Image (tube, rainbow, N blue to C red):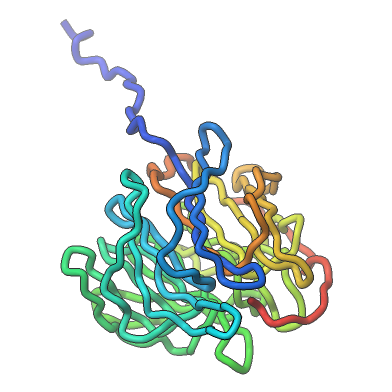
Length: 322
């Protein structure tokens, strides 16, 4: 009977576990040890086990079911220092444990996961969680503090940042097979302290600081065409924010607008090219990190949108990014 061989449509099964956005550390008058989780299903922020050491300017990522908090700076009255500290958080036990530290302290570090390894960028190292060991990789072409990082198709991208003299619009790509960095097309705008996230073949660079003001503009990089274009701007200009991706949408959280530390959350839908308000953080902060515990692969076909010219955002007083 031929009907027995007709292809049927079976609804894809997804793990029945909470999808949680974790936000760790940050700065508000001093470095914070806070860890919070946002449950996308009940739309509520929950306070979790605190970091072992208060830190801002740290990087974070999930690897093999564990949340890693990497580097940063402890800004406290009378005791401020850059950190080589690395902690890992077990979501099931709600508990932090220390890992092997990096070879050098790193503040405003970019962190990403590729091929089962954790990469810390701004000076570059790779961490093997099975061996609990860091290995130095080839340095980038430029020094980059407050750099944004993303991974697409097993390539690691480092975008923007600050070298101590100027902000960069340049970007480069790391090829793990030959341990080499290659320059790619530059952004339209120089910026540091931007949020960076990837969806399908695209890398989004959100907000940041251009040396004179915080930005609300967003640029998108097509990794297949080596081309940048502007997409819809955020409602609020900000730097030192964190971004992450959930359900093919970008969550831009917190940051600094030149006057205030923000709790605002904005959510970007690339299919409609619009930003909408999300549930705010429990308190304002900048220099925090974020990552998603469970994120199934993006199966939506995010269609290419035409270039949309964006303004550079509301002006604000010049300030040093916290």
